[in-house]
Image 1 (cartoon, one colour):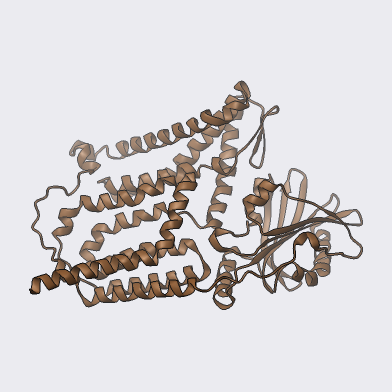
Image 2 (image 1 turned 120 degrees about the vertical axis):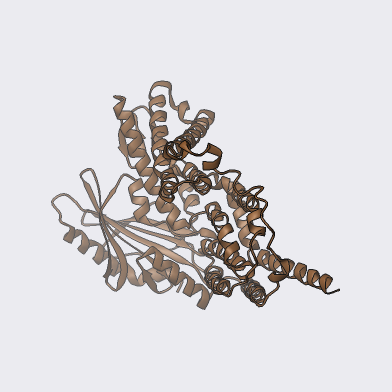
Length: 512
């Protein structure tokens, strides 16, 4: 009777743990499935949990040979995970929720099973991180940098083949054809899968730790180099065969070839690094795909030890997370009322204005709620005024930082500082393209607060979401040319004079 009771209690505890964990992160799972299905650079993510489970199953004999020793250290890890979960849910920061998911798994394992079992499954659990999308700000930054680097290296290959080419930002000008290195060609769709594969290989690779490190980190330069070669080859083929070489099946097929070559280089690298080990071990022992199988170890694992006070605290924390999530979901985000920007005008005395518009494709890409783009003229000198408004920053809809977009247009940022001008915390940038120079001020306006730093914006967004249940924000940018025979001080004075005229009128564009 006692044995039956213990088994029932164990089964109930297990179902409760798994059920609460699934409830707490259900929205995260749904979001991840959508990402894996719609974003090519993360399409490998669906396989990662399967591989992680397989790697754990592969060590089952070692796991069952360990004694269950519940630990209170896991409680501390679960508390940390709960804190990250609280911030992620409140500010709707998906990346924090995904990190919390992984830390919670580690904490539960430590709490319920103890350190000896945790260390055997730690790396497979950590592998799950490679299925998660990067935060939008970090991904945008990485994409922009990889686009520029790949474009530059690709153009170098084209020039090496004695073909005349001109590079402006991410646009490769071959004369009769122009190729744009778009986000999809940045190399991320090869980088993330290859880094995941390199991590798995490094885990299975039974050599020195520094050699494993080389295998993993070398996946980054390998991807960048091969993607640059791919861009260069496409440019060469377009020059001789026409623009169809950069489109359709041929373009996609070249991508598959690049990834397979990257994997071949990675495999060859492991073969070289294991030169000494292969003198005394077989390749199956070095690349241990069959590690810890059929060891015939004695079973020390006792399921009844899993029912402990530590396990009870793990259940309690997960229950708190579920209650908090459902309570917060009952609160609907406040979307402030704003007038359509097309109905608004600054009407600045002494300035003539010329409204501009963005292509629909750009508006869709930026996921703007509304925007205004106007050129203002005074004394034959122009000031460009731009506001991009987001009524919500939920689900990754965040302003795109100018410091990421500027290089894509062929401009070089030669100076970038955070300053306070006219009481506004802003970024001041000097940018150049060939002989042209511009001065740029930009900042983020959230209600009545000006914010310069993109990461500080995340913190203030959390505070706004917690205190006001709002996440609306506007990116404000004003730009002017630094004209010939003019110094930067004169351009600064022009922008600051313009700011004096518009500061008290910005509130009509940004709800307070």
